[in-house]
Length: 605
Ligand SMILES: *[C@@H]1O[C@H](CO)[C@@H](O)[C@H](O)[C@H]1NC(C)=O
Ligand SMILES: *[C@@H]1O[C@H](CO)[C@@H](O)[C@H](O)[C@H]1NC(C)=O
Ligand SMILES: *[C@@H]1O[C@H](CO)[C@@H](O)[C@H](O)[C@H]1NC(C)=O
Ligand SMILES: *[C@@H]1O[C@H](CO)[C@@H](O)[C@H](O)[C@H]1NC(C)=O
Ligand SMILES: *[C@@H]1O[C@H](CO)[C@@H](O)[C@H](O)[C@H]1NC(C)=O
Image (tube, rainbow, N blue to C red; front, side, top):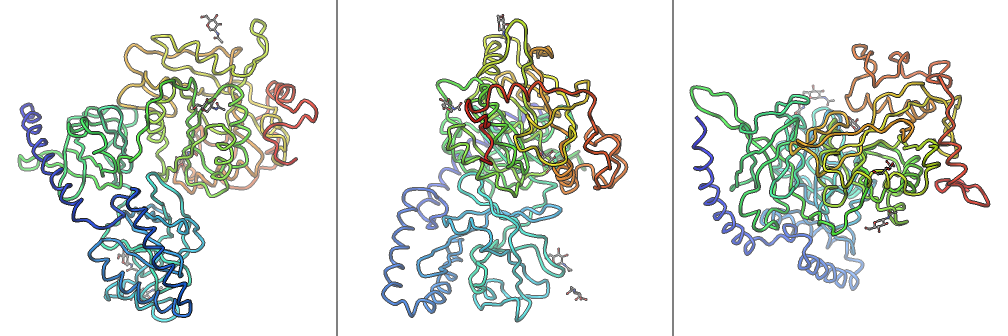
């Protein structure tokens, strides 16, 4: 059986480990591409010199600039083979470096993960995804340099990028449409209009399918946590960790270590010893898992999962003094309502926000930057992985652990509300923080649960100007579900969670807050315009397709809505059983400007 195996394995890890560091040392001296070590001071310095050099040349000979651009791009193409990166000069003072690191195909788009040091790439409308015709057997690089374009031959086709977004460790995510008929998956991106200049080429990068992929990895103490799609997982059940292993540094050399827990799509492995000693060795290292297949002809087979996951280069530095209360949320297109949600809860005592952005295409990024600038401690994390809410929450719990005593997992349409209480009276500033800090000294409470009231459109037909807390005042009578504030230190190491419920470590338990202490107002069924957007999203993300009748009984559906995206005639009056103006009255009385009554999130003034 397997029992003597781990010890034997350990020996080989150590050996391989040494080999790797040796190999690395060699690589460092040989490898010239500055992208490898970006963002080191050195590469920035090189870049600056490079830039300065061309700037001077082109300034002296402005009329010859175009010619030079072409010449130089030919030149850089030659060097590409050597340096494994494509360098392109576009205009005389603009240098673009973009390198595609990996590609992932989703059912409705293809994601390119790349690196760049040029801010211009972030501006999506300047770039196109490049596809290659199935009927071309020419060398792709040659086509690009010769300037094959859409008008002439159909060897290369450019289509608008769907979006460009910043990703961890200075990487970029570029979303491309699925390829047109008879074209391959996108192989590069290029600057629009300059068909001869392609700025990022996938070269030989495989097209990973989303169904089978290690997509994120993160360090947690002396373990690495890897998020994997496609390993057999059973909802709410733990898997036998002995069938999994983690692998670090894909490529020629790998260090392997054993898994300590595996549940859902999260595998936690011991960190190889060399990385425990020197955590900086782990940074930026590609990580994946393998799992054991049933024996075939007496042989055990381990299947390696393809990976785009890298351990982040930045560490979450442990804070001396932790925040008492933080929030993790995952959202999509909530730019219009997040300001109210954050300012309100910040008033109640939330000190830090981790916003996982689920492929938004509205102004959420700007709104979050503004809020952070105003001192609300909001950070945005791009989370392009579809149908992975549980994994996202686990990921966030690890991030928050070093900084926060308590983390509330909630949605942007959920608002804590403290009804008037004869003993404590009305809530004041910081009430929610005070409430959780009451349990910080407890050695057994790891989760604080609060029930939710579901509000309906409350007779409205358009978005309430003063915000959801003031606008929606009619709800269903009985609470549905509850939401939790979690103590990350009390979480089970398997990080298992199902619909906002984490498994707690042995010895920890939860407490239900009485409804007269606190409740969550969940503005679940808002005016049709808002509600419809939410439902279209579900269709777009392959959750229960609402045109598909099979899931009609699901609680995620609006009862009585049917399966059509058409506004029911009496939508504005639905889900209205009792009027409840508690939070509205409280907000108007306590949060408005003393003289004008304007609420802090009201931007219309
Ligand atoms: C795709 O290729 C097939 C086979 O050559 C051809 O019959 C078909 O017309 C092509 N489709 C398009 C849209 O070009
Ligand atoms: C074109 O090639 C890609 C792979 O390169 C393949 O997936 C696709 O099915 C091909 N399309 C057609 C129409 O042959
Ligand atoms: C933001 O974080 C800092 C400490 O990192 C804290 O002092 C400050 O109160 C926080 N801001 C808010 C609005 O809670
Ligand atoms: C994020 O999107 C995924 C699918 O893309 C979905 O399963 C999840 O519920 C979404 N989460 C939120 C908070 O919108
Ligand atoms: C906090 O704890 C104290 C003493 O244990 C208790 O009297 C008080 O009601 C608690 N406050 C809240 C908001 O739970």
